[in-house]
Length: 256
Picture 1 (cartoon, rainbow, N blue to C red):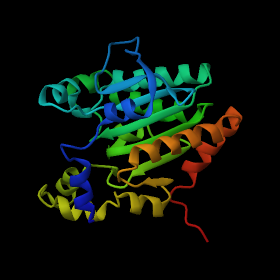
Picture 2: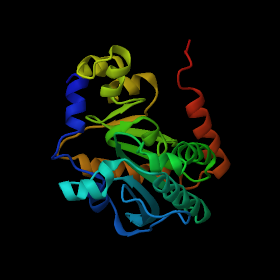
Picture 3: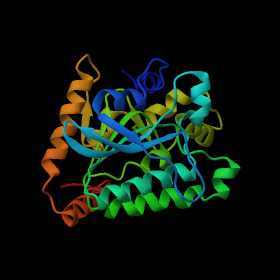
Picture 4: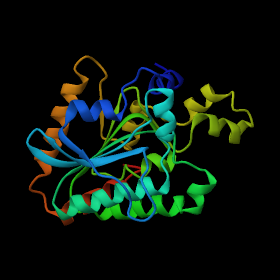
């Protein structure tokens, strides 16, 4: 499949969203709301659950399914309070030594006036800084779109995985085409330039694993998550933070 075909697959109307993965992968999920500063953000689902018998913190970006639900979820474009809610749950996970599992599906953070007034850039930057030093294991799975800082704010992880038809990019292809060629219709050409597919990003070292989208997807993903949690269960917190830091320091560095 071409990069443009991957993009269309990632945006498909019948594609599973975060709520589907939460229902399928976890038990005893209890959602926790609000950032204790401004309010709640329906684009972010965050709470505690069990992965098999292990308590974990789950943080997901939800686009919604029906038109009404999509509007309620702001089409998966989170406000600052959403990212602050996510960070609050991460800090609680650190306090109680729970692994953090993030599910990302967003075209990007919301760029409306209210979001900017409430510190959208600062909220994302704080997440990047705090996640880098968090002393519990973090794994992020890109299940659909991964757009710009809105996705990266939940993707400073020890391991970053992608479904094979997901995309991950510094900008939307439409935005890229508008900037480079002043023509948003050249989206297919932009897709080829952005190296946004799972295969491209695995080769560049931006992601660590590609999850095949077949009939065994949910079983494989659950097993992989359980293995990640078990593998890192006894790892020292400082070591986890250092491994995460070094992982990102190596991105873009040429190898001999």
